[in-house]
Image (spheres, rainbow over the protein chains, first blue to last red):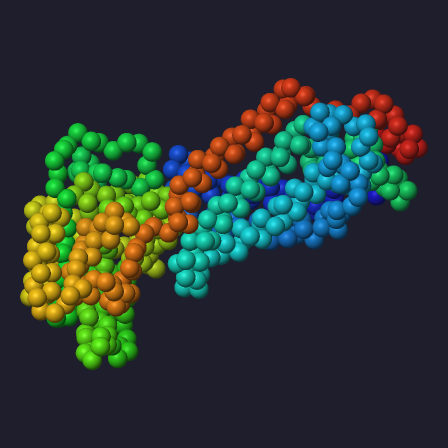
Length: 209
Length: 300
Ligand code: SF4
């Protein structure tokens, strides 16, 4: 698939649904998790029907996220393998941040920043899932010791903060780089967007069609 | 209860508001358990169930006196029997287990629900069940492994030190029931003085390591023990030698909270500043033209 009059196809309908399930569960997890993390944010439990309900529902949203993210991982892992261009791109991060593209290598479907977001979230979600199970007393209380639970609590909070920070980078990139969001809302990007940001990918897509 | 005694609250879990401080001169209370006088009759255990109107479900016996085997959501105190060989002697060390009412309570520190755990100015640490969300963080915060979450209602339970009785000038139910007066109750100061007498007596009878268990790692406790072997508290069914709030819990509930929120706020602020200083990254007309050339005009 390359491009029609609407632009270059970037995400299939399945990929977009998969992405938005992940996105919504991640936001809900962040809100309910932060509510139980800091007393000043406990008021967020009202969004979920109170403290008890928040405590009960948070792990279930986690299960949805884990399954959904696994789908994303299977879809996109191969496209996120690191290559030499990524190292060059990272060295030019200063330019990227300053909106200058000269000297940047032509890129495939993802740039190094996107790949780091992908791998960062992949690792953190595995850790969050594992530590989350240890903290899910309703079902798994008797399977771990108190010391393991303490470690899990600290690891869970640390990883969650990491995931939230990466999420901020991810969302901001979509706001900053104009023309990006429609890839996830409509599934396509403009030819110019593909040329500017992912030229190698555009060439491949053109060759394929 | 929490509202009626609000002037007597020293600390409240997960609360950023300062507690009232106008009332001064309250007395700190303590329960003193003289392990050397305990005969293991479990009258205190029964009194606890009776006063709090709780019933321990019928369990199984597995050949030891401990019954139930450990603290449960309904049994807030349990007698722990340890057979210990000290030199040529076999000693039967019986310890009444339960909440120690730490002066620096780990449960309260860990609890994320505002007001689910309070510490009164008299030192009693109490769970306010209506505010409890059943997350089990108190279990992780406790250095003595005391709170239990009920499978029935997912609420945390433990000894209240009979805060309701104490509030009206009564001693805890267990202290009232003990037939050998192994459980004393009064001001912490008086209890320490009384303990000294008991320790001197024990020493005169050959227990040269007799002493008071009031561990400083948790700021002292409002439940103290007189032990014949105060140098080896572990002998008493694993009473911790130097209990303190786990450093992991300290980090989790300490520096991590402000630092994390600061990091999130910083990331947001950085994005905002970047946008207003560097502006958006936009696709130029020339990019569209070049793309169209490449794709043979089939592009958008
Ligand atoms: S389970 Fe413990 S930590 Fe959690 S809300 Fe209840 S009292 Fe607080």
